Amino acid sequence: MTEYGSYKSCDLCPRRCGADRTVTRGACGMGDTVFAARAALHMWEEPCISGERGSGAVFFVGCSLGCVFCQNRQISRGRGGKPLGARELSDVFLRLQDESHAENINLVTATHFTPTVADAISDAKSRGLRIPVVWNSGGYELQKTLRILDGLVDIYLPDFKYVSSELSEKYSHAPDYFEVAKLALDEMFSQVGRPVFDDDGMMTRGMIVRHLVLPTHADDSRRCIKYIFDRFGDGVYISIMNQYTPTGSPPYPELCRPVTEEEYDSVVDFAADIGVTNGFIQEGGTVEESFIPAFDGEGL
Image (cartoon, rainbow, N blue to C red):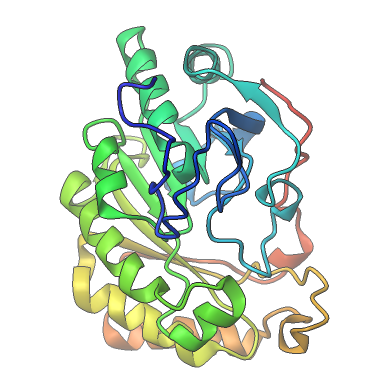
């Protein structure tokens, strides 16, 4: 069993499904074996994460949040991927560093595998992993689970999706999203503190909070930005994204179109008006670009 915890009677995520994941699947759609779908350089993160060489992104299969608009639904619903033990995952991290020359190790949606991933990070560090480790998540996480990562993760890259419980219930079946996510952000910030950059402008420690603007819901986006800024000020970076890509969700006609320029600009302008200076924005046409990589097992 992992050094960092058990998958029996699982309570790693806020769903607290209680499943014995050694014999069945939990709310995340996964058992106790890590499955990953890709481990390769990724150029589409914020500039201080991707840099010139690319972020070493490891995409994990399964997810405990399950948003109806998920761009990675091909794997987030618990399908596909390659099984990996902690040592094999550690080897992947070291290959990304030593062979691919990645700027960092970017763990994408790994919350439901936290104990094994923590083992893998610890092992890789003992064998020479020296680049920053990035925890890239949906923000729906328990403080007690995040504490497993204290001292292992250098950069937190969480989403902060909603303030409205009505929206979070409708689109993520998580009416408690805001209450859970704000505590998660507090825990992340307590671990890594204010941003630190190297001489090349790459983040080596700190937190970037992402918010994806959804069509028709710019009002809640403004509430999200205000909460983050009121809570952390310039102690974190805020990344306001316009890359929402319609996935064809018939029960949700309001989500079946991209975000308009007017909607996105209203959120960006609001952020500027309240004093946000540490941030990232996306400029036109991002929905037309491919932010969804091929989940073909590359690098595993």
